[in-house]
Length: 540
Image (cartoon, rainbow, N blue to C red; front, top):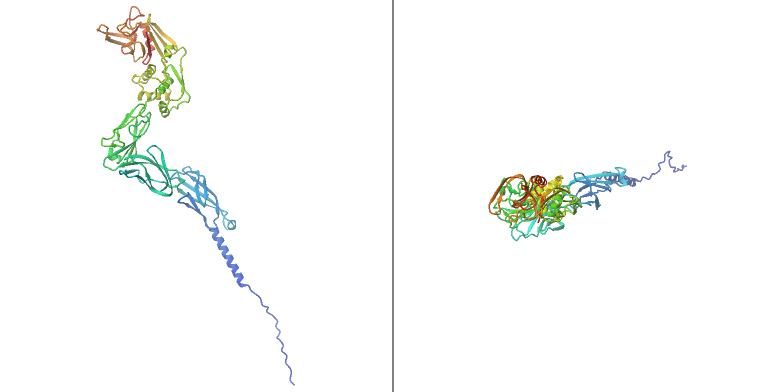
């Protein structure tokens, strides 16, 4: 008997349950995290920059993650003053004109994105220090051939150029595409013009004088101001030569007349400038520069000569009145500054103001002699009085030396302390002399004038010589001569006519040979009040 078999599964004590593992997703996550960390690291370390620009002042570079422009600060010049700017497309543009070749500091503050700031700072700063570009002319001395245009060339491209035309206007040009040359419409064979240029549109133009000369071996001089023109008393004179100064003039600079009015200075190898000092050439002066004979003056002038206009008669009277040399005073509506420049300007362009009689009780005869803006004997006498006080020749002519002395006295406040005298001589019977001084009659009495054959001239005269004693000589009406020594208290006022002392038996009628004779005592009194410039009015 067979025994049946049974299929029985063996019993196991530890049963293994299958487990699902997601390998691929985990790997991807790790890769993403690593990439993100790398991006954050790169973004956190990204650095912006600020660099020079060919158009604007500066340009900001912004790499990924470096952030955005938060604030821009620009300062310029030796004082590093703040410059207002605007930013467009990361370009920084000044809103005011900057000087060429000026130190500029640009500071840009950036704010980083929030998702980067946790691995880096929230803000960052970048800085640029540069100098603004400077446009320069290649040569300021150009040889210009006949019929050729005048072309000024620049060392580097410019966006703006201008020049001064012959009539004084300025011709300007702006270039969308920078250029390196400027053509000037100029037909003159030689000359000098002012040229302005700037490398950037936001720069102040730099200026320079450009001179041109015809081709040739002879030295040509360009004078500024042009020869033959009217200049001011302190106007500098510039001489620009077609050849170096040292070759044309050697070691000696030209003589200038009036001498001692200033000094030469060297501008560059081809140019010298005469700079007046103090009161300069003087009002009414003729100014000359003695150039060598073989130097040709541009424009055809025969000589390097100029004229300084004389001061006006009105201003002459104003100054004499203010300094106390006239019987009138003057009050300026707007005071002229006590400087040489202001006084010289006023000399040719007198200030507004008003004259008034200085003294009460001024004689009517004296008032009739006053004429504002007219160079009468009254004004001439005042000039002579001032000249005598200033140690100048008392000729009554307001030349350069007189104007200089007047302005100097005005600036220093050196007023006359003598007062004002008016002498009235009456030829009516009995003849008399009356002296009025600063509001009062100070002397008077009988006098003798000229006989009919040698009369005392009537009219208004200024005393031109003042002597305590002298010898008088002359011709008598009969043709004989006289020589009288020891004549005292003499004030000459018209040729040989004078106020003086003379001993006569009586006075009050014609007895002299043209003079006004007085007793010694009266003559002494009169002499004390009749210095040079005193007005003597002889009335028939």
